[in-house]
Length: 601
Image 1 (tube, rainbow, N blue to C red):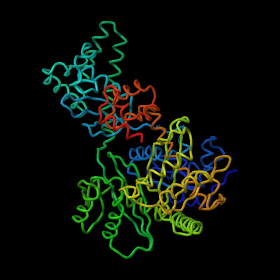
Image 2 (tube, rainbow, N blue to C red; image 1 turned 90 degrees about the vertical axis):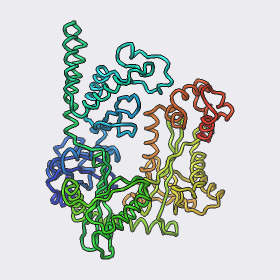
Image 3 (cartoon, rainbow, N blue to C red; image 1 turned 180 degrees about the horizontal axis):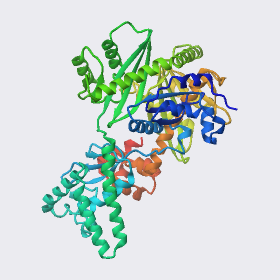
Image 4 (spheres, helix red, strand yellow; image 1 turned 135 degrees about the horizontal axis):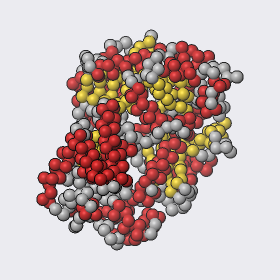
């Protein structure tokens, strides 16, 4: 019979009855399930009542849960978007059969002389985005309807490269601005009608569709009438979904904090495209006594100094030197950053929510914070003992194959025990020795270490961790000697069942006890570097291997990609081709040939 652990029982007693998102974690601290709830306390408590009567999967989830965390939100709608983003980020194993991994669709109206209209998966800078919408079916049907009623172009080719109208013109589905420049006025009217529809003036389109539906029924074209009827219903539903979401395309960070004795928790809510996508809690102990504005200013200066992205607005509760900080952020980001200190309204309410989350985390997760700090201290002590120096920055590397033919390398970075995703890097491996992990690892490290003096690669690691044992470590050691670099190196060794086993250091393997903090730390690093490599493979699979490689080269689009593959017959031959051979391909000019040649070298 399952017995609820004491720490979880205590956690459940303090969970609030608020909407939010929760994350279940296993013994290694890995998130294994993410869910949302209108009332967090009720939902979380339900998992741990009558566990032995739960369905098999639910029981397995509960038994494997050793702790949980939660994030408070203002509404279920906010929780929905945050849940989807956390699932996508953490890939919890108990969400695999339940999650919907697609993003919410937008409709893009491009900003061109003759605009185009099509579906996209994220905000696109090429024009005006409408949405997000909650259903692909409705979006697809509405796009069909709009194109049938307002015949704007669908093609992606530049108009100056088209010599005659295509089939859409002959089907009365395009005004053909490629051939008839006198259609500009009619085209602009069609575009404005489309804008009006997405501004919630849907009735003109619905009236036209209903007339076409009735005419089809009178001709006894019942199949056509059904198609138009579905378009009408989708047009009505789509507007409703857009009103329901009430989301804006804004990028804002909200920052607040709470204090308990000598400990401070600064909490940051990340809002992108109008949605809360993440929450960060930063714990500080024994800070000097300062007022709140000084503490926030110090945090902002440090946090955004190396941030991968700085939003256009930062909302805080108090700051003393706003103008000075804005100038600093503009220099760091390259764009203007507004700093808002709200007194009322939605931003004030959001800031209060951030402060609630900060207080919840600090007061109700104090034991976990202490435990995490103790674990970090233990890991730091063990690493400094093994490597005879303090380890502040470590870089971990892994090699991965796509169907045994296409090799990529991944680099993940940890600073002071925490992941630093802004410094992650991927490498396309270009050696010609087939599947050779040792040669691939050498190539990746050689390329990375040659760039130590470049911006973004300038930090020298205190420790390099390689996924592998004696062969991989010796191979990388030879690269370090070749480049006259003195950097500690270790292999992350796995057992026969491909599970974390130990560290290969100084020509010997040090086994790691599974109950220790250092084992959990190395395990997480191995999982992270492997995940990062696999995510690249998934991206390549989605695009198609050859297309993903060739069309990422500057100057190479679909037409030139086809010309290259037709001429050389394989991607491997393109990779090996000399500059003069590339110039011989139809449609490949000197500049593009040089880009292709450099890309694979």
